[in-house]
Length: 106
Image (cartoon, rainbow, N blue to C red; front, side, top):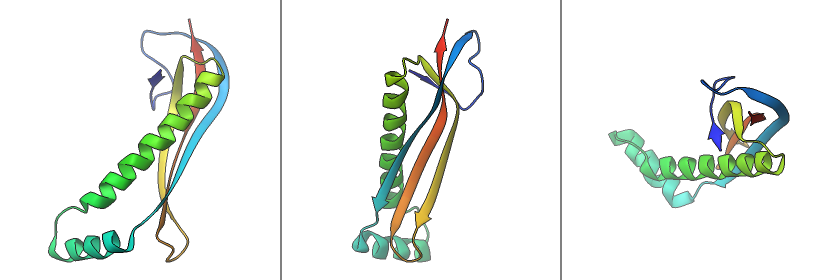
């Protein structure tokens, strides 16, 4: 499955548009991870545990989107957009969503 943020695929012709596809992942943040990440933020450095959680969430959301596109008979997904956000004021929940247009190629 070809996945791209661009509206076209260089060297390939889009034969038909199959529809908008999406995937979402909502992730709970661990209290201990939050505590150690806040310490790291104070002393500097990267919050590796958060980065792993976001990466896993992104992979899950992308996989959901790919499966939806495959059910529609698509060969590719164009115009892909990734979005990250926090849910609730102090809930410790993160969301990753991804969407794009499923297309069939010639």
